[in-house]
Length: 95
Image (cartoon, rainbow, N blue to C red; front, side, top):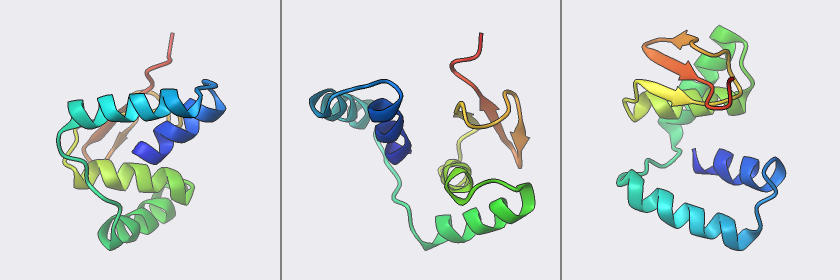
């Protein structure tokens, strides 16, 4: 999710706003289709949060990946190699 990228880039990586804007342009170019957060993703996130005990925001990331029909989600916020209803989580920062 682009929201998560901006948050991490700003808070954890210390990117300036111009760096974030440039990175977002590159992501938009590489990603092609970017799916919006909508009522379907919110509803799915509530179910996932309840079922797995995730925070709503983390559940929204998973729900969005599932709706976009992703097989892999790269995130440091979940257990590495965790499988969630057909989605596999990989921590890109894992040693």
